[in-house]
Every structure is written in structure tokens, then in C-alpha cells.
Length: 343
Image 1: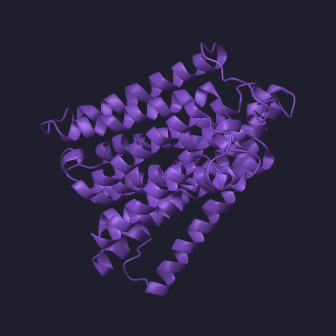
Image 2: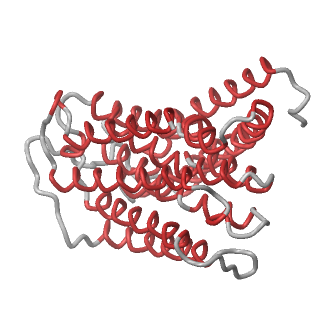
């Protein structure tokens, strides 16, 4: 399908429709992920961090890969790292919605701490690549290989942390336990549930391709800044599943799933850079983008560090009834948008 001959109103309508489909799929994914967590016994934090995080990130993955294949390095890169910043800000919104206490206090879980620390490490790898010579192996920068190795090593380590934790959160009157709402079922029933989950993921991937093509056409047609389009347009739209699943998880009382889904999605999003580097055939993608793109990576790194501190401090209630980390996250993200707007 060619988008270059379509009128502006139709392009915007297609973009909005794709975003709407992503929104609806995100709502359905949350409920299914919660049921999978209960049926398999893996727990909300682990399922949220790995399965739900990867599923809700799928549309964004397709956006970045499609953009890289089209030679749009900035759009591919900024879409990935911009989504990390946006999705972390969504946790602050969830904290505002959950009025009983600070979300990071209530949903204390060692898996979430591990995920945040892993994400800090993963986000540091592209910064190392940026400061080193442009070298590639089979057309791929070594940092891309490192991201994959660290990510999957982290996923395996996270399961060990979940099953045999060496740290435990102190329980308070507000601490929310991750107790299954649904008994573990037979394998056949679980396969039907997982099959439906996979079908929703396929729809998300298709909508991601549509968004990438429309965003690329809008960038060319109106000579827009690709970094801003990626960080503030496609990244936010493809992050809608994370916002919806987080709010839906809070509503269902699956609080560990809410935090795990965001941080796990952000962790998975770092693989956007590896996939984009593979798809980008004009050299290392880490050296093909500008400092404006790395600005959003740095913002994501700062926001993840703030979230990690909030999970460690576990403030019961702070300014406006939310945690200091939520106030800080909204301030940092809002300030980043303002800086980019005036820049």
C-alpha cells in the first residue's frame, strides 16, 4: 500500500484509527496477561515484565524496524528511546489514579527493582557505542550484540530472582500481595489463552507498520524533525498499550503487573535499537543519529533511575498524595518536551 498519494485528512484518519486499534488491543492484553500469570504461577511482576512488556512493545518495534529499513535512522532510534521516557511517565499517571497510597510503595517487588537496574545497564550501552569508533561486524555494531546478550541474560536472572529472592520488601499495612485470582488450569486451556494473546500481538505488529509508514510520509511531506516525530508522536501512540494496560492493571488490583509491564516494556524497547541497527544498512545506527536523539535516551535513563530510587525508598504518600518519584517523573518528562519545543 502506498501512502504518498493519500490526502492529509486520510493519512491522519489512518494514523488515528491505528492508534485506536492499539488502544483496544492493549486493554484486552492486560486481562489475558493477568490470567496467564495466575494460571502458570509465574507471578504478575515476571509476566508483566517479560510477556506483557514485549507484547505491548510490538507495535513500536515494527515502527522502528520499518523506519530503519527505509533509511530513517533518527525516526527509528527516537521512537524506541522516546517510548521509554513516555512509558515511565505513565507510571506517574497510574500513581495519581491509585489513591490509596503511593503505587511504588504498595507494589513493592524485588523483580521490579531488578528490572529497573537492568534497564539502566541496557540504556548505558548505546551511550558507550556513541563515544566509541564506528565499527561493525556483519554490518552490525557490537553494542547491538551486547544489548541482546544482556537482555536475555537479565530475563533468565530475573526468573531466578522471582523464584529464589535474596531480598524481601518489608510488608506494611498498604503492601499489596500478588495472590492468584484464578487457579492453575490444564495445558489445553492455557494454550487457548496464549493463542489469543498471540493473535492480539499480531494485530499490534500490523498497526505498528501502518504508523511507521504514515509517520514517514508526514515527516517527508512537511519536512518535520524526525527526532521529534519519533519521540513525541509515534513513540507516544505506540506506547498507548502501556498506558492502557497500566491503568487497567491498577483497576484490576494487579499492581505488580502494572509496574512490571511498564519497566519490562521499557527493557524490551532497548532491543528496538538492535533490530534497527540490523535493518539500517548504511552503517552503525548509533553514529547515524544526532545528539537530539540521544537526548531522549538520556531522559529515559534519568527517569528510570528516579523510578528505581522511588521503589527503594517506598514513600507511602508524598506531594499531592503521590510519591516524590511520580512528581519528579512528570517534571522531568514535561521539562524535556519543553526543551525540545523551544529548541
